[in-house]
Amino acid sequence: MTKQELSQKAGVSISFLSDLTNGKANPSLRVMESIANALDVALPVLLETTDLDEHSLMLMADGKPVKSLPPGYVRVSVILSEQQAFRVRMWSDQARQKLGQEAKAMLEKMQEKKDS
Image (cartoon, rainbow, N blue to C red; front, side):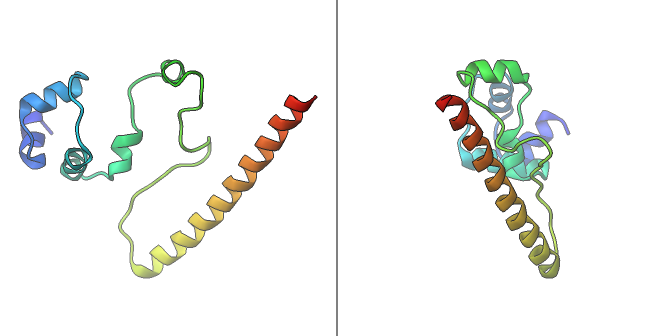
């Protein structure tokens, strides 16, 4: 898709898209949603995607982790039947519980190191 096509589908100017891709613009969530819809992707895909390497991201975040999900997990956006969506929600709940347990174990290990 060209910038012109994206501009038309998203309802934003080509100059704004150019500024955005060059890091000179700061889009609102509404504009980001329009761009995501024009690209036929979920908004979180745009919000979590970057072309910066992990080292640069860590520097920008003062050494804090920058990924919202640990390795081995992915976030997807799909269109499903109600029955399929029910099953996926069950899987999501299970994955969230597992992540919570893993995070708790990790925090306990960090606390043990800190205390020793």
